[in-house]
View 1 (cartoon, rainbow, N blue to C red):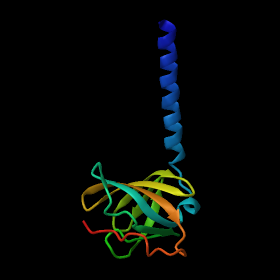
View 2: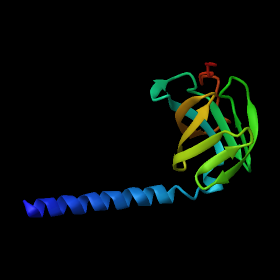
View 3: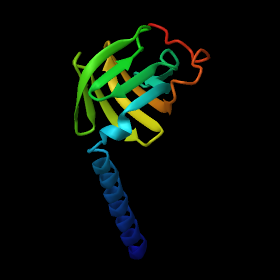
View 4: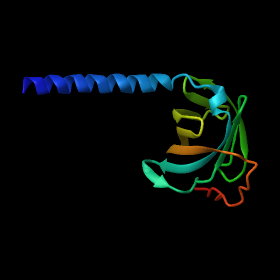
Length: 136
């Protein structure tokens, strides 16, 4: 019994150490990795799934971010602090996860908390089949 408790304790410590490492790794985001065109594939608004912004496009490059979350293109300057994009309209986009093809961000838009999953896209492809975001 003591051995089982000891093993369980070691397991908990290891899990906590691994979580700390993954959070630390996302603290420094490469601008090269985040630059590009992204589309929203999945979104949660106030802890409930929503499809109203699926298909919205984000274009991020060299300190500028353009999105069509409100139905029209809006462009903002941004600065990056650790794993957060701070847009010139005071909106904060917290990067939770980032690879060369997937981006997960948290933000607050018009008092609604959003968690968005985005995938990298090539805008040269035909995007007419992508859904247009619905204003909420």
